[in-house]
Amino acid sequence: MSRLLFLIAIAAVVYLLIKSYRKNIPPQDESVTEDMVRCAHCGVHLPRSESVQAQALHFCSAAHRDAYQKID
Image 1 (cartoon, rainbow, N blue to C red):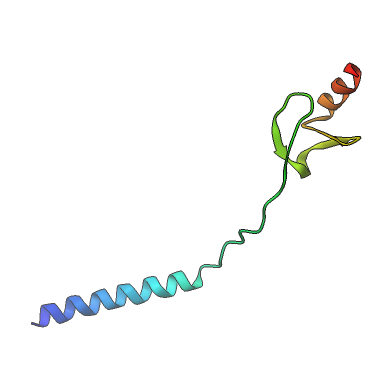
Image 2: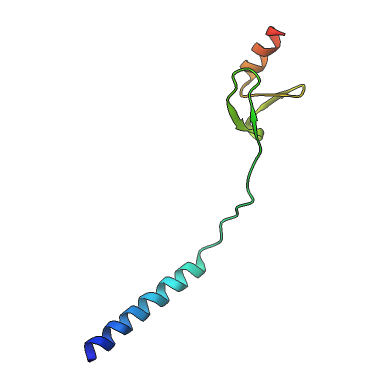
């Protein structure tokens, strides 16, 4: 009987430790998303903040922007 009570006590302590650990984890901010744009020259998708913009088009690099402008 004492072994059963000891096992229940250990399980309760483990449960409380896990519960307190999960409570202290900061919630992940799911709202940090960014629009993806397509390079007008090669078609690769990349975040808007990393793109190079010329006129109303987005490019993955300045070299692709320049190459696209030479084609036109």
